[in-house]
Length: 148
Image (cartoon, rainbow, N blue to C red; front, side):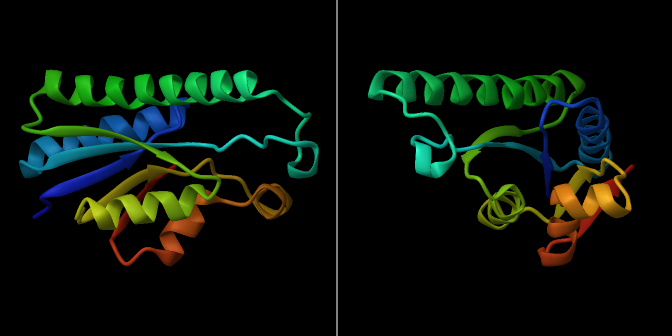
């Protein structure tokens, strides 16, 4: 059935539900689990949408973002291993294009299923904020299981 399942997480309660479902599916299928989170690249200057920061502040901000993201995916990997998943990976991607980073990770890791949550935004809210889940769903060549 499935050999490698990708589960993106952002640490929200909805993504935690997707993580639990992905772990269950991995157990049922005897599949490997790949957890990914996308660490946003921070703007560094006024013209990029931020206040001007010195190099030390930029490096500290990047390091803090990286560590937080790594803790998030490491927690997923640990939970999967504790439940008995045979193999689990934790990946942090750095990008401002979340959906594209998820799709690229699924392709690069040779995953055959993406399990992710949808925040269920409708109409104007979805139009204004966009939907990373919808983008993955419509642009991925890999099957996507969307949980609401």
